[in-house]
Image: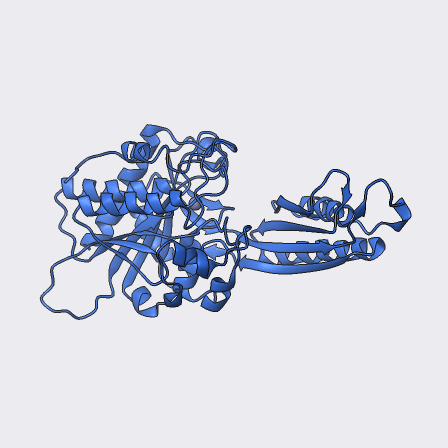
Length: 410
Ligand SMILES: [Zn+2]
C-alpha cells in the first residue's frame, strides 16, 4: 500500500492524459477516452489504498474507507471529500484533479497519523462538473440531488449530436439508472471539497489555503439567433437578415449591462456561426452567456436586459431569437456549522467567496458542505496557465487531513 505519496506525484501520473496539443493544457470531457482513463487511474489508486470503489447510478465514483460495525443498519454519518476529473477545453491540470489527488493523499496522511475513524470516509469523483460536453455544469451532483430531471439529461446532446444516453452507454454506463438518490445523500454527514483557487484572493492575502464563504449566483443561457443565409457578394446590405450582426449586439450589450453592476461578471466564451464561411452570410448563430453576481436578482436583471436588447436588434435585422436557460445556481452560503468547525481546525485560513461553481455548491442544498481553496499563483483558471506550487499543494493536503481527522474522530 502506498503511503505518504504526495499529491504532486499523483498529479504527475496523469500529466499526459487528455493533453490537448491544439489548445494547450487538457481537454478531458466526460465519457471521452481521457476521462475514462482518469477514472481508471482513480479506481486503481483508491484500490491500492484498500478503499472499496463503487460507481453509482449517476456515474459518480465513491471510494470508501469503511469502519467495522456490529450491525448492518444504514449509517447516516459518512464524511465525503473529493472533486472532479473532467476539464473545460484546454483547461489546467489542477481544476478538479487537485481535489481528488489531495483526498487520496489525505487518506495516507490520516493512516500515517494512526487515526482510527469512528465513521466512514468516502472519496468521491463527480462526472461532467464543467458541463463542457453537455452544457449543464455539475451534472453528476445535480442528478444525485434531483436538481435536474434524468429524462432531460439523457436527451442532452454534445456538439457532435451524440446524446448523453448514447455517449454514456458507449462508455459502459447504464443511462437508465440516472436520478436522485436520497438514500445515499441521507448517509452523508458532511462533504468537504478541496479546489485550486480560481482567482487572486490568496495571492493578495499571501496565504496558501482558504476556506470558502459563499459561491456567488451563476447561470448559463443559450442564445440562438436565426436569420437567412445568403451570398456575401450578391446580397445587398439592405436585403440581409444577418444573425452575426445581432450576435455582436448581444455580446456588446452583455458587456455594457455587466459593467454597470458592481462586481458582476458576464461572458460570451463560445459562439457557433452556421454554416461558418468567410464569403457566406450566416443562417444562424448560437452563443452562450455566462452571468454571475452575488445577488441572484442582479443576474436575472442583466440577462433580461440583454435579452430585450437582443430581441430589439433581431427585430431590426429580421432575425428570430430564442434564449434558453441551461442552468441557474443561486448564491450558496456554505454550512455555517461546518465552517465553524473548519475555522477552529484551521484558525489561520482566511474565508473567501468564489465566482466559480462547484459540486460542493450543488450538494450544499442537501448536506452540510464546505470547501478549501489552494493558492494559484497565476490567479487564472480554465486555462493552461492555472498552477499551484508544490508547498501550497502540500499545505492543502495537510489542511484537508486536519479537517477530515476532526470530522472522522469526534
Ligand atoms: Zn473545478
